[in-house]
Image 1 (cartoon, rainbow, N blue to C red):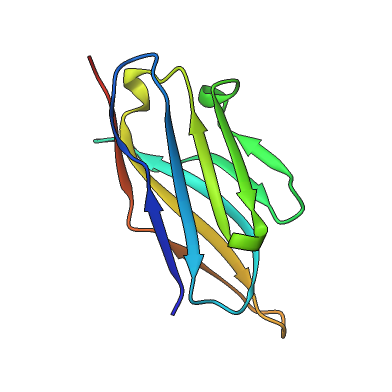
Image 2: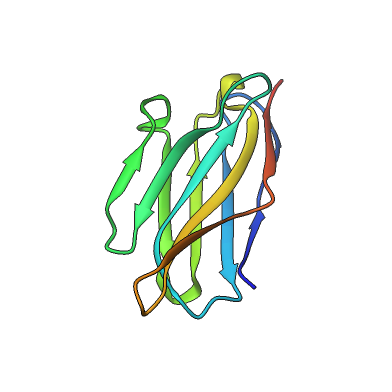
Length: 120
């Protein structure tokens, strides 16, 4: 059974930094892409950052220049370094991964979510 286990959320002051980690386990299939989404109260879930197995990156405009996504393929782990955090970054951050089987089928998985709160 595939599991995505997140860590690193918490409370931070505006301008501070946090680093989120997400480790995928329980899958013998290839990971095509991994990414981070967030959902603030009363808002829809949005993509924050994504990274493909080949290293292609994409970011939400609101986090460009402040957040950095990286990936350790050997550890099936994705990281999100968040700098210059703003109160509007407050949300539940969830890890997401796309998998591909040897026979061409794809499926995805979600982490349980980790709370990030930016407040003074």
